[in-house]
Amino acid sequence: MPPLNAYPSPPSVSRTAASSRGWGNGWPKCEPDRLVTIAREDGLRLPINQGIAQLVTLLIDETERRGYDVKTGQTWGFACRAIRGTSVPSNHSWGLAIDINAPSNPYRESFLSDMPTWMPELWHEYGFFWGGWYQSIKDAMHYEFLGSVADAKAQTERAKRELGRGEPIPYPFLGEESERVRSAQERLKELGFDPGPIDGIYGELTEGAVEAFERSHRRLSDQADGAFGPLTWRLLFKDEDGRSPDDPE
Figure (cartoon, one colour):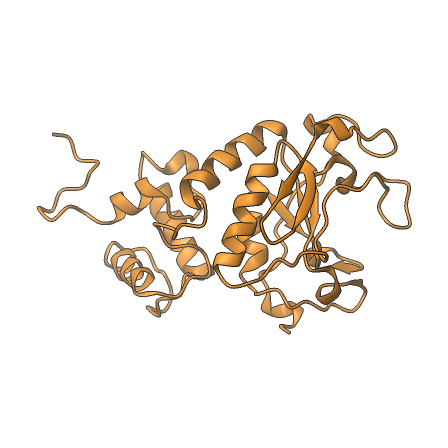
């Protein structure tokens, strides 16, 4: 099992109450009519807020496509309760949190997890915060959505474009090791954006180079996030005739 320092560092996020983000009431006045149940052929039944249900489905599919099994009977969603040991409503009480493979990713002071090191970053990329990043007791099973209702809609549409229903991702993703990442690194370096070692691994240095490339480009600067999407990929690689798709006719 990887040590905690093998995982990405905790991102800086705002963890405000879900009620202030448009999600209605949590514990103790939970609203179960806002829930739907994700039902999979393997027997998984996951009650979750309808606003993030499709997003969670896509992320579970992608997690398993990359090789980590989300296990039936060890994975939970909605629970009308407070955060353990407090009177603060849990994100589970809005159906905005999911616990994945609890026995091998326990809630405890000494960190323990069998999750791949890419997994927290994948979920965070679409708006979730990982419990392994908590400052005190670690909750490695736990992922909670920290955005608004509008954020959830936007992230769902993005995931539908980028992840699909278990189909191969058309563009490199953070943590990927491949020849297409190596090609992107070579191209970034050629254009003056340092991706770090040309090793075919989409790590933090390459992500920073992608973001710098995006910020330098007028069509990408407003949404620079270091993640490859269709436009970033197209504009990084010019057409065979030497023109960029962004060049005027």
